[in-house]
Length: 126
Image (cartoon, rainbow, N blue to C red; front, side, top):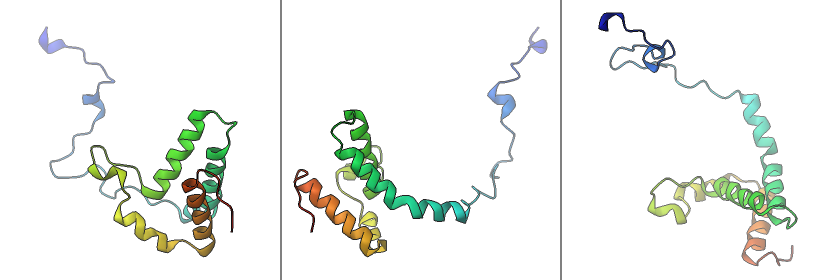
């Protein structure tokens, strides 16, 4: 009876290919993101951050949506915290260096957002 065992055809053992030891199943790695997609995302990223800030500040929005907007803004600025990391409360040094890549307009918007956040939303624009 053991020789005539019926195996589930959807079993993981049947789905996973047998790769030789030390050889990757994907030797070329992940394909690059098309340049057009990267340029479109970069062109719209500032608008996305401004929209998230508006959602965060809109008291008519549900609290859960506002919290999620805050979370996304923080992750955009400092990166996602790593699980179990002691340094999750402080920004990574690499994130701080990326500020040099921002344009003057982006820096001005960031400055206004940080000023507003630090003053409890009572900041006056320059």
